[in-house]
Image (cartoon, rainbow, N blue to C red):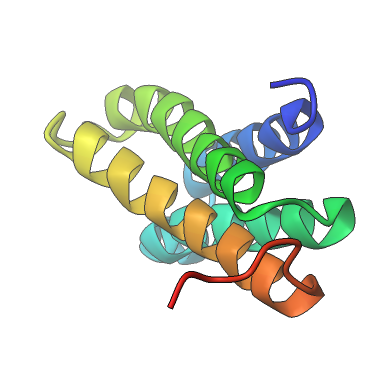
Length: 118
């Protein structure tokens, strides 16, 4: 995890900031689902592009970037907003996917280090 630790931490801080901002801003609260998936998408992409990783490393990093930030952000957000706990696995899964997607797109754009199997 040392390679992606910084990016996981950045995504976590942004997710928590979004949760706290959502408590004072109706706009942020209304778009928190989109922001919650957009943050790992962008951070996953940045992680993959800046590191120039293999597909495996980019994928694992993107999944972690999405999962950690979303899970901890939702653990804070659900009690604060009185939301339903069933959102925790769904939101974590969705953000994990978008973190992976961002890392995959970054891997495709940056220049693959390994060919796709045809």
